[in-house]
Length: 151
Image 1 (cartoon, helix red, strand yellow):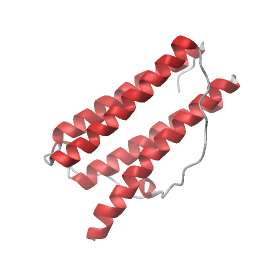
Image 2 (cartoon, one colour):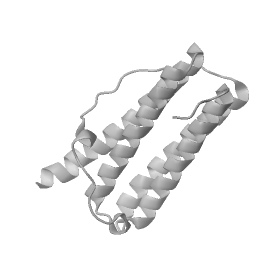
Image 3 (cartoon, helix red, strand yellow):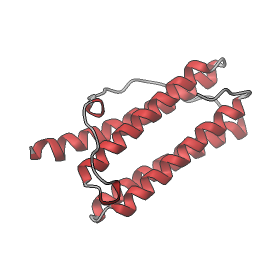
């Protein structure tokens, strides 16, 4: 993991990660043939844009007032693997990839929280980790409802 010299460095890193998530979901949406599924991924891209904006506001205004909490974890992302070419990805594989990406984002924010020396910043990263875990849960629930029920 990177070393950070300032809070701004940490926030810049987190904003870059959020932009990568936006690009990921927009890219996935573009590959989906089903309009409804495409819209699901575009919705997640919009949420990641919101996260990036929240981080930018925190950086600009030095506001650290977000609340952290807990969300349940079905752990589906721990046990499924994406296979095949991602350019012609099936919906189930896109869901798995999205779950794994959200899990990685969660781990990133938790690691940033642990590295933070400022209680307010730690709380901010914990809150963002919570948001990412909620995203993962939404993908897990969708996977459970759509894919697991088909089998």
